[in-house]
Image 1 (cartoon, rainbow, N blue to C red):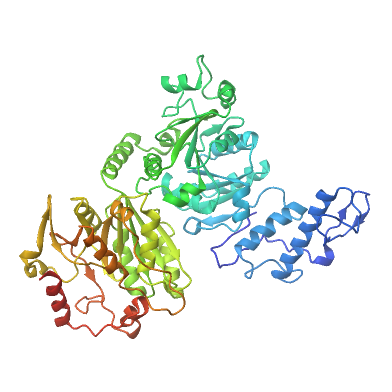
Image 2: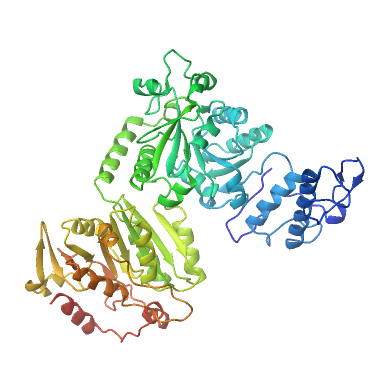
Length: 628
């Protein structure tokens, strides 16, 4: 019943039937009704049959040729496509089989454990450009979900792949939904969760499974009107992050609001629960849209480019508020939110909360509290360069992911680490909406990833931060450094201190300088764990560094040079008081210190320089040199 799909690099296979070998291929009937088995090698013309219907029949011949090329690249004749076939190849093969009639016309169905929903074998770059991914999260309510599918089959006027995220329903619910979709001829992907993980996390699972396509987030109690999808897609223009329809339900897009009714030109009464009546009433607004500050994600089209730029929904807002937060994040990054004035969708308001017995008022209060906290915080991007040393990476990354700072975006740059480190990063960050994993094929050092990420985000955030992968940071260190950075326009790079809790006693009072409400221990340059205002970075030259090739020496002093440039501009670098204390695990005083050849040669491999063996005395000496 299902076409299973696995994680990248693992096997993917078709629906269990044995594929026919080339000598048993199904014949094609050409235009003169003779039966033949043709594989046409010529571009644009089929000389063997002298076919007058050249484009159609030739395309069919080419599809068959592609099919047999894939066959030879996979398994032998008479064997199922098995462990040696990649998910991309399986997706391509499935579409070719369906096209030439060797697979069911109904779309492929993918059954994935909720934790493994990061990739679908039927989703690749070609499919991404051809179809729209519709994400339907639901818990039980199979009858309502089937009604929603009926509506999509009736009014879905663009190619669709539906991602049904089952949020802890009874055991037979996913199969009932899949069987109903097959009867309707819909392309369905099923993601199953053993428990209800919340609306936001379920939507993020669907976004990851959708790949690089535009995404429609659709409640199972929402029913689109005729032409709704194509009209919304028409409004998804450049720098438009999200598009929503008009509805008769409560909310910012509702016809119950006088302002909305006036803008769309609806004066009489309409049946708000009838999507056809709503679409008819809005037909005169053909091609028009209006701006919005936010959208309710009961039926919202999200741009694939916007999702790649500023990420999926914030899972800390599990049930309510994640749509408002995502829209606010998009507007802050320079994207627009629109309402298609000619698209209509009927929505059964609050039915999910009533059915699941959730206290909507309490959830709304918690969401408003978190949103208010986030609005008070400037957005920050943090880059962590990683190269091997898995024991350090595990602890350091966990301390970063536990930061109590809602407006934080985390970018982990893997410098071509070994397979164990790479696998850990991929699995650990798969379900983290705030985190992005970048992997370079070779070791680029510490400074180049920092320069690339800071340059990429300098125009969309207020703060730029960096942390080494051997540092343990307290849960409030981002918030404290952010507060220090924003205290004065004269401040440059702010750093956290890792030499010990009694370091305040070593500070030379002559190096302390006040900047408004904060004091600073001046230092020519800081590193390891630091933060800078994005406006400072935009106004000057970028960090001087070049991509490293092969075994070229690293330009390790480039960030030091950059901080010296900041000093010449009149900015002051240093450590804010009271000191923000962190733990550097390579310090031999740390209980987490690993003293092996691999770990102790890290500085050489990442920065291209040697480092003398550090003793307890030399660590203390360095601390007093920095503060004295």
